[in-house]
Length: 67
Image (cartoon, rainbow, N blue to C red; front, side, top):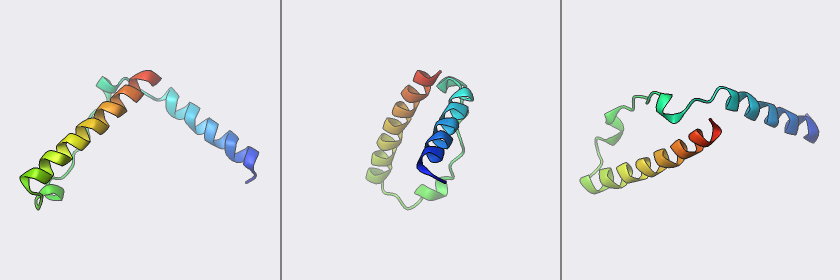
C-alpha cells in the first residue's frame, strides 16, 4: 500500500469511527476483573484509581467534542 492509499484509509477509518461516536454519558462501562488488583497495596490502589480517573476525564472530554 502506498503512502497516499494509507492516508486515505486512515482518514476513512476516522470518519467511520466519528460517525458511530456517542456522547460519553451514553457509553456503558466495561467490567474489569478485580483479580488484576488483588496484589496491590493501598497506596498502589490509590495511585491507580487516580490515574484511571484522569484518563477517564480526558476520554470523556474527547468523546464529547466529537459528538
